[in-house]
Length: 214
Picture 1 (cartoon, rainbow, N blue to C red):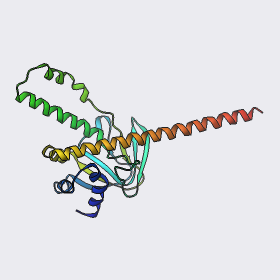
Picture 2 (tube, rainbow, N blue to C red):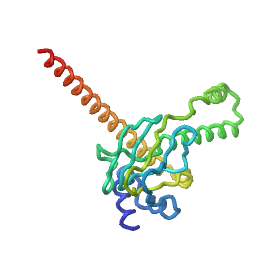
Picture 3 (cartoon, rainbow, N blue to C red):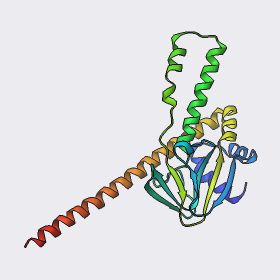
Picture 4 (cartoon, helix red, strand yellow):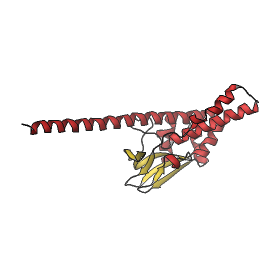
């Protein structure tokens, strides 16, 4: 594998338990592709634009994360970041991927039930709970001012490999869980920083109002 592939293996895949042979399989089947995107290009969408076709990992450049039209944060990278780094945000498109993964698992369970011709209440319960597989909240991710380099992961090909390799499937789930943990920690930090700035701004305004009264 090339230097760039080696780098992403060590930063993103290996810490989650993906072996080098499994990673080479991802490369060989074309599941991984490096892309460069210019400024102001949305590559992950929310609402009707949601798609579970691809996952993305930011290697370099800057992207803006928005939810329901509101900017949440701008993330900048120079040379990638390890999934184990507390400042990592994992991959983009993970919520859509998890939705698709849930749906696939449900379909597999239904096929298994049909093959066994089970007609008990558990089937009815599964069918009645379709709403739990509704759309997950997802952000829009857009490149900002620079050309951004990203790893693009083909989810269809990834699913095919996961179907045949439970070890790989488990490692991918670990990768997603780690990424979500990093996102939550990152967003909590953003919220805390915003609240701190608002508090200081309000406190300063009160001081100025008090001072002007003398």
